[in-house]
Image: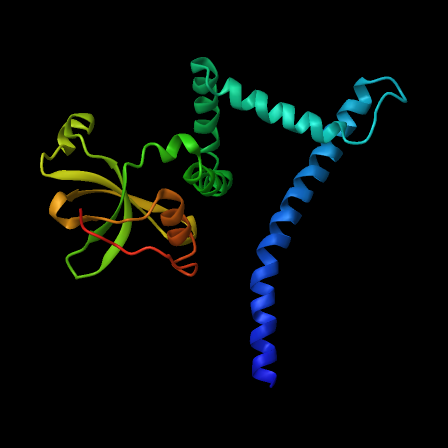
Length: 201
C-alpha cells in the first residue's frame, strides 16, 4: 500500500513539477522586469503616470528591440567584441561561456546549422549522439578538410560542454530524431527517453 502510494505521489510530482517550474520561471522573469524596469520608468515619468505592468511591457519591448538589433552587422560586431572582453575575465568567462552555450543550443539560428542528428560510432564500440554541422569539405578549414569526413558536434549531457570532431562518413549513422527531441534527449542524459526509433538512411 505504501509502495503504491509512493509511486502515485512520484507520478504526481513528475507531472506537476515541470508545469510549476515553468510558470515560476515566467513569474520570476515578469517580477524581475517589473522591479528593475519599473523603477527606471518611475524615475522618468511624472509622479502618478506609472501603472503596474509597465515594467513587464518594457521588458518585452526591450527584448524585441535587442532581437531586431542583433540582425544588424554593426551591432553583431560590437556584441562580439564585448563578448571577447568577458572571455578574458577569469571567473566570469567560465560562467558566461557555459550559460552562452546553453542558450545558443536552443537558438533558432543555431538549429539551422545542424543538418542531421546522427549516432557516431567510436573505436571502442560505443555510440554517441551528435549533430552534423558541416558536410561540405570546401567550407571547412584548409588543413581540416576530408572528402570522406563530416564535421560533427557531440554535446555533453546537461550542456557542460561538447566536442566538434571530424568523423569519417562510415562512422556516422543518421537517426530518425528531430532537433528538439535530440537536444532534449542529450540535455537530460537520456532520462526523458525518446519515442522514436533509429534507422539507417
